Length: 308
Image 1 (cartoon, rainbow, N blue to C red):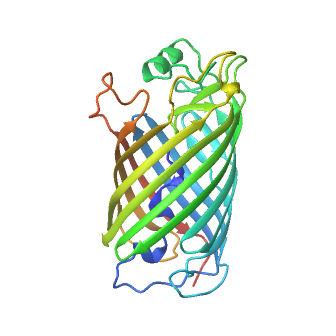
Image 2: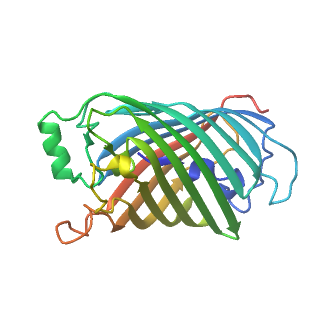
């Protein structure tokens, strides 16, 4: 649904970044058992997903300087469940400085053969428009299968006054067990044809204004770029289609309260409304440009240790 998660920005912003300027900044506990939860619904493409980030987090060192204060090591899991499948596996994060985070993850993926997913195709040049996917579901072309995803995701973030800038890049290696003769498959979260065995590059750039708490508003630019080789093409076929895409739009969150490191904290409603700048099947004369990508989500954070 959303990318790593989270690709969801308010789950990982430092506590002081979300607090009002006049409020004291609580000291980060040395040890934490953290649960970040997210329930999201999406349109264009249609989707519904529950996500969680669960694990142990510890401070690497103590330093009150803005560049050093928000440091940690995290080890846990990041399960994602939707009506079509499940993704689950270990994740590790290290944030040596407030401005840099590196996340490494491995996921087991299982599709249930529901809601028209998973559908695979013989070539990266194949048609994966919504009409074609609907026809494939009606013909029973979807099937249950499993696979894995490995990801390396560095994040750079900086705040100057009320303005925060964040950029997360993703290098993802996918390996799915596809039907004989097929080389690519439609991945709904990435909204493109992913190699049965290969790489996808992603990037999310956020520019946020945080001077109106509890409201955070800004813009997000997103990019998805599958990398194909001859293994994703029929013999003697040349790649003739561009399956990467770009979109940009509004990003906003309303954080109801922030009470520090408690059992239930930072409940928030998130909204992302974006328009495709480039997409093989979501831009052009055959598609209304007035139809945006729309994501609406509810998130929260929990600390399960008694930090008092």
